[in-house]
Length: 311
Ligand code: FAQ
Image 1: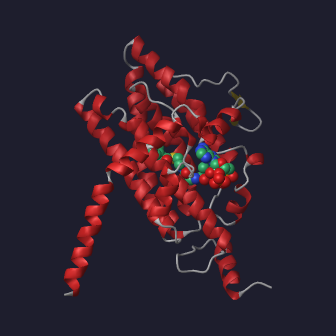
Image 2 (image 1 turned 45 degrees about the vertical axis):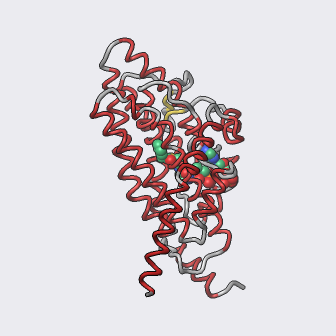
């Protein structure tokens, strides 16, 4: 027998309705949401680093203004997501501590370096492109605060994706050297972007339960396939090639079949041994330390204000 609350929860999920913070929910549902939402928030925050690397070196004032705005959007996404996790009882301090202690996950993609300006194009086109593909269905996630946060995030990601595409388009219309720089960058970001969708379906421990709870709406492989189908015509417009010699159109399924993904590389990055893992975490730790005086000043100010209002 199940309790009245649990039956209500099951009915809400069944009816494609929403679970809100004060509703009863199974402990596993709460935990899994905190897991996914906090990882997602950390990704947005760590994800500011690869692009902030180019803010001072963007090739024009216009590009600099756009890039600053884009990186600032990512900070905002991190904040909406931390707030969504807080509605589930997670505290901001615990989440931050886990991140800087190296105990929390964040997306593998942000552990790759950005040695050229073209990487700003590839991140927008491929990384934000993959993010949109993965996150549009999350706007319908069964947990209200998460789904609602995703709506605004996806709108902003859509602008990010276009600005990246436009950077690459301009480089591809440039000199031979610029075209080479764009192609080299696409070659480096393509496979890691496909890994953003997570492990293959037969090796994805969380998928079945997350789909039953209607947090995830599609499997990792399904979304990865959708992304590649979307990329092929866009690559043709850009004039870049996708670095997969086995990529071919399957007449039967009407989809683009891809070659083998190097899952060893994925697991290495997840284990902390990607090209930039150590540097990303160190930078986050330093930023947290550098911001200590701001947090202390803000708390002292808040304390004074509340004392004053009590008088
Ligand atoms: N990297 O059982 P599953 C962005 C972990 S976009 C690291 O399949 P699940 C925008 C996974 O957490 C990037 N870890 O897990 C932006 C799990 O570990 P756990 C962020 C990964 O949850 C652009 C284990 O492997 N987007 O930030 C990765 O059902 C530009 C087993 O995997 C999101 O987080 C990976 N790639 O599916 C920002 C979207 N893949 O927890 C700045 C929301 C898997 O058991 C600049 N999240 N793992 O220890 C999701 O949709 C899902 O959580 C998945 C994974 C699809 C990522």
